[in-house]
Length: 243
Image (tube, rainbow, N blue to C red):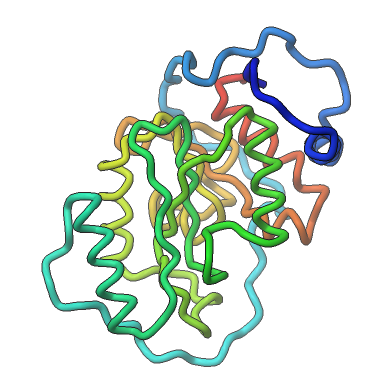
């Protein structure tokens, strides 16, 4: 972990718990590279090895059919300010809560999820607690966050695909934010941004607009299946440049 970052006993215990669940219970490198000094790795062109079946996210419970989600009929925005206004207008038109992106340009890490699951933040509650532990484990404080579908729409969580306009706006958000690393959580986001399901995408390094990118299991999945934390840890090590 980066030097100079303070951590209290409770947070340290939580972090050690994450490492223990992830199987990191042996001595590791003491000279881990600085996050900001990591060099880019070449894109993996080879076909990835088959991934064990547990990493494929199971279908979510069936949800009641929802009315098609309409979006404002206007050109798609191409700047971060315009994107923010576009999402606000869309949320107002739909009469639904908006989970705004937390974007800092040139941030060390941008975490991207699929659909909004809660009304206040991309990752909150029990999911947010685990997300924060995962970030602490790789030495990242207060990472930028982005949801492809930031409007909380009941009855749409089980839908596997996201509207093309939302995916394109997310791509433009990432391009505008220019993060140093991109961590994609869950099958919806992986399919939307990398064009492949999570079971195929995880376990290897990608480059999204030349940004080093890794897809991994969503914290929700890891809460339900703690033994898969080892797989998420392996993914994060790839993104850190440690393997």
